[in-house]
Length: 266
Image (cartoon, rainbow, N blue to C red; front, top):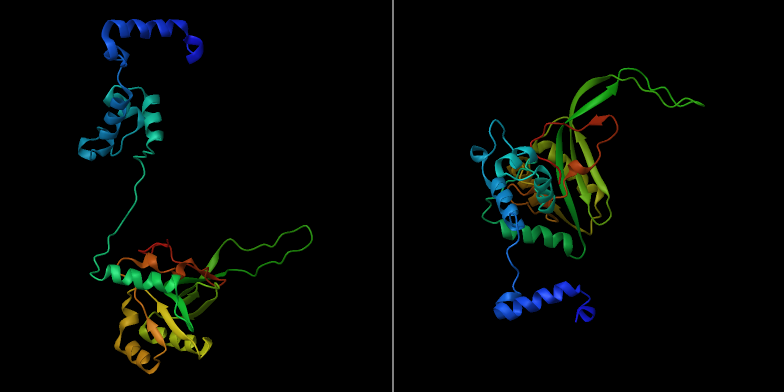
């Protein structure tokens, strides 16, 4: 029997003796010494779910040492459990749920345009980037010479800020952009006029912008009425991640993107 099952002869004798003494109940695993592994995991995960009021003293987040002291387990055990369940109490993320009542309809509209655009139409992802710093080096750039790389001064001169309006053609990666000193409906209308010139006349133009107020002013609505081939498809409120944002586009040379904007690129 031991050769057929490839186990030690003592193991076979132990199971036969337990079967003779207790029948099928004797074949069940007996309690093992120490704390069950599942109890370790439950105690560790329960500690993670507690808020800061039920967390460690004099700290806002658990560490492996503080949780080991609170649960009575070793620090190495806590570390193994954290790795097994991908727990990282020192990390945090932000989120914002959209409250748009037409969220589902708008998502289907935008995603449908990207996946299956209409025939004889061009789908453009439109976004703006305001407050871009226009920078220039304080001294001339020294060109590269043999054995010497190109050299630039470490400081720069601020020449104010500018605004970038850009439209990304997802199918080809082509970008149509224009720079303006201000960020108003008047500048956006100039950008639309540029799109009207550059997009072939035989194509319908579907623009996917976010919900910025600049795109919804009466002046823009009148322009759209006089240019019926342009169609705007707004993303849901607080869901501009549906739009391949223009902030992913590198600004022209000499311009620097603002650092402290409220939104982030996906």
